[in-house]
Image (tube, rainbow over the protein chains, first blue to last red):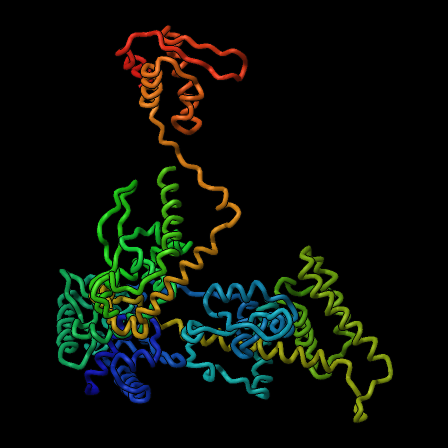
Length: 189
Length: 189
Length: 260
C-alpha cells in the first residue's frame, strides 16, 4: 500500500469513527506496523497543519482523533451546536488536578491532600468521564484507585500525561503567589 | 476572506456538523453569497477527489455533507468491527452437543436440560450455520425445532447423524423419560 | 476582627489557612502560629455551619493549630540527629502540597479554555460498514473440537442434569392428569349390570381401577336405582351390595346420554 492510499485510509477511519482510535487498530487496518503507521500519521498531521484545512489530527496517548482547528471556532459557532462545556467548580478542579498528577490515587489520599472529603468531587469527575476507576489498591479495604481518562486529555488539550503542565517547585512558588493574589483580589471585591 | 481560508472553514463546519448542512448556513458562516460558496465547495469537491483523501463532500439537494469514500469501506470494516475473536463459548458448545444428540429439539427442551436460558447460544449457532430450524413442534405455541446442519456433519466428518458417538442407551432412556415427563407436565398445565 | 469575605468561599481548612497566610503576608515556612490560629478560630466561630461534616473538618484543623501552638511554647523536641523539630513542619508540608495542586488546577483550567475551541464529531460509520458481518469460518471456529469432545460434553450435561434432580422430591412420583371418559364409564358399568343381571358392587369395582371409576360406578348405580332399573340390597353398613337388574334390555344408552 502506498503512502497516499494509507493516508486516505487513515483519514477515512478517523473521520468515520469520530472518537479517538488506537494506533494498533489503525495499523492493523492498513496492514502496516505501528511505527510505520505512526510515521504516516505524523506526516498527515504536517499536511493538516498547512493552510486550507479546517481539521487536524489530535494525538492522545496512543490514540488519534480528528477535530477542528481551534482557529475555526468562530465560523463553527455560527453553525454548529456549541459543545457542552463542562464547568468544574474549584473543588472539583482541585480534585482533578490532584488525580491528574498523582494517579493512580485513592480517595483517602486525595482527602489527605485537600484536607476535606472528596466523594462528591470524585463522583462528579467520574460522571463527566474525566476520571475513571483504574483498579484497586492492594491494601486493607481494597480502596479504588482513580486516574484520568482520554476525555480528560482531550478536554485539557494534553497529548499525554507527560505533557501535563510541569510542576516546577521554584516557579510554582512564584506562580502561586501570583495566582493567589488574583484570587485574593477576587475575594476582596 | 480568501478562498483557502473559506475552504478550511467549510471543511471544519461540515466535519463538526457531521450531517448535511444547507448551503445558506455555510454561506452565512463564511460571510459569502450562496453562489460564491457553492463555487468554493465545488472546488473543494474537486480537491477531495484528486488528492489522496479518504473523505469526500456529498451534494444532497441544497446541502452538503462530508462522508467517507466508499472505496475506504474495507479499512473501516477492519476498525469499526472490533476484531472480535470468534470462539465458541462453553455455553454454545454445550448447546451444540445437546442439539446434535437430541434433535429435533426446541429451545425449551434445551433449557430444561441445561437449566438455563439458551436463546443467545442457539442464535449464535444458527448464525454460524451449525444449527438450523427444522420445523415446528405440534404443541402449544408451536415452538421451533432445531437440528444440526450439513456443515456440522461435514466439519465433524460424520456421514449422518447415526454416526454420532453413542450415548449409553440405558442412561439415555432414563434421561429421556425424565425430560419428557417434565415437558409433558409443562404442556399439560 | 471582622470577616472580610464570604466563608463559603473556602473549600476546606487548608484553603482557609492559605488565605490567612496570604492575607497576613507572612512566610509559609515561618507561620506566626499564634496570630494565624487566633484568626482561624475567629473564622470558624463565625461559620456556625449546620453541616457537621464540613464543620468537623474545620474543627480538626483548629485542634491541630492549637496543638502546634502549645508545642511552640514548650522546649523544642529534637531528632536523633540532634535537629530541632519545628512543630509546624508537617502543616507547612501539607499547605505547600495543597497550594501546589491548587495552583495546578488553575493551570489546567487555562488549558481547558484553550482546548475548548476544538470541535469533535459523532461517529458516522456508513451503513455498509455497520451491516458487515464477518464470514464465519466454521473450520477455524470448531478447531480442536472433535466428535469425542462433543460426545463427552453431552455426557457431562446428562450427568449434571441428573445431579440437578432432587432425589427426595422426584421419588414422590408424578401427578398425572386422569384421562377419564365419564359417559364411556357409565356405559360400561350399566352394560355390565344388564349383562350379568345379578352381580355385586365390589365385583364391578374390580373390573377397572382408579378413584374416578369407583365414584362413577357408584353414581351409575344410584342413577339406575332412581330410574327403577335395578334393585339393590346391602345387609349391613360397609357390606357388599348385591345388584339385580330389573329393566328391559336395550335401554342402556339413555342413561349415559344425560351425562355427556
